[in-house]
Image 1 (cartoon, helix red, strand yellow):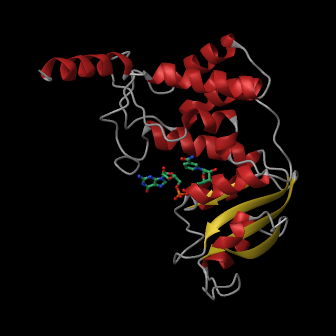
Image 2 (cartoon, rainbow, N blue to C red; image 1 turned 180 degrees about the vertical axis):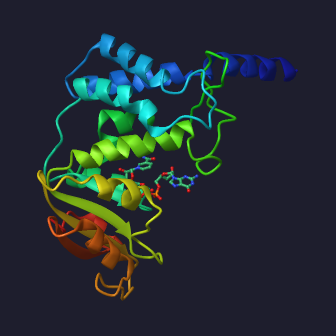
Length: 250
Ligand code: NGD
């Protein structure tokens, strides 16, 4: 019959599938360091350890952003320098921005080791347990101090604080509030820009074909200008979606 092969496949699947969180992150770490010519088995072990201590044995709603300070410190010792004039932030444009950044040599948080390690992952711990979990974890808005949200807050703050020269942000011109005060970009990153090393921020406002939206007609962008203050130069360009195929905004 066909029952036996199905059972075999399921068993094999169970053996191969639970690529544990630790394995996954270490694999990402090694891949990244190799690709950037910084290979060291040892560093990935150290990084896993400081990642782990941020949330293991803790209630998954009681992990504050500063729990990741030690991880961020460890990663910063291993990782590369910021790339001035090519740094790109984003809000509500995750898919588009990464494709565009890759093609046009911009760097996002997810292109740096810290973001690369944890992008698209979910994790948490449990009080009284040494285990790490990838399911049954609080989601983004279940509670404020959850392990994933706190990580992105602290990683975003560190990334923004390192932005130098002319920086960019890709915003979605097809929604009501491209610059949303509740976003991580507005509530964390803009607040951490350092005007002694950063010169300007250029908004790339991505619009749908035929949309008549302009930088000037968008109310939310006025708040961005205010939030940037007088020490950072503000610029804005409308980029019709089709133009993302080229690197024309340069
Ligand atoms: O309400 C939410 C929610 N808000 C953010 N996210 C949320 N997930 C929910 N389930 N419910 C998560 O953050 C989700 O994975 C989104 O894909 C991601 C980004 O949210 P978005 O598009 O609203 O943009 P943000 O402005 O909040 O944050 C993007 C900026 C960007 O410049 C990165 O340097 O902040 C940094 N970042 C923040 C959070 C998460 C990156 C990530 C990431 N790589 O997942």
